[in-house]
Length: 464
Image (cartoon, rainbow, N blue to C red; front, side, top):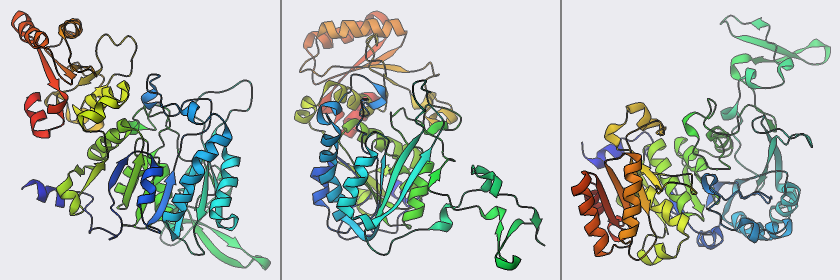
């Protein structure tokens, strides 16, 4: 079976492009205020956004790395600055939303009341449908005030008719917190438990069956927050600081869209909305500023949704693509060092080192696929594996002999047989030392030039 046939038989094939006006299954890397104006009016069925909250914490730190800050505080020095940042983006989102479409804006207590006023102005007060309160109990506890344990999700619609699939999002009664209302004491002839609802004069109106579940109220208590790799989050947790659970996005997408309709996430972070949309057979568009986030999203779609990142297959609706990544040498020279480091490690299909201070000369790890048990390869839980190769990254014109010497010490200290060193180029002394190190120790340091990493075929050859 050739690769095209395998893709055609994937668990989530597409019947084709749903619109001749807009491309879907695309991740755009860049500012959404630059990308949204390129989309036509009324082309999207559902919008979900979870923009960085206006708080004292830096929510744009990827994987919690203090080194990877994108000046959130500088850009949003006040609540007014945050609203001014979001307003033109919401205007564009309202423009691209279909008349039958819905928008979900996810925020928290820091600026939710200001966001509500701004959304009323953009969408119209009469188009406000719900204030959903997502409640959770995970996380820390304050002794100075009542613990803040909920997020707010504002739901707005565009016109007088909208999609709402109530039957698709019913929740088992035992998961709801209002258990006092869920006593099913009667059983019908088929063995199904139910309770009867009575009207005036004790007239029977209808039955509620326990196995049918219940439409959630506008406060959700049955979906756990992502706070780490726990039993509740399973293999879903990626370490993104504001990562939301797939179950949350699946409820939203099921409720307010239909199969093959278009879902847009203009602040898509680590890609939870895209994964949920893909699993539910929706078309999707993602936008995010961070090249690192876009590459992690792409890997997540490949690993969790089993779809390919392939330009040719994408044109026939059987894959996805990432657009506008800084994948030229001049662009890669300009991005911040942490972004370049993450790009290089992820390009090697490795895992970036979370510790940027005291990393002992190792910026990332590559786990040979052949060495993995099937369960570990599928889950992405690799930290327990002892067989891995270190990666060192230098964003410089030419890595020299001292750089190689330092990495040799890291390879020896980790007791590894191979290591990868990434740079734009290498001095002759550096290359000579790589060969001498192998002759002395039998250990291999593979020098990788960025130009070779940009070519898929050359990269496979270099990694062999």
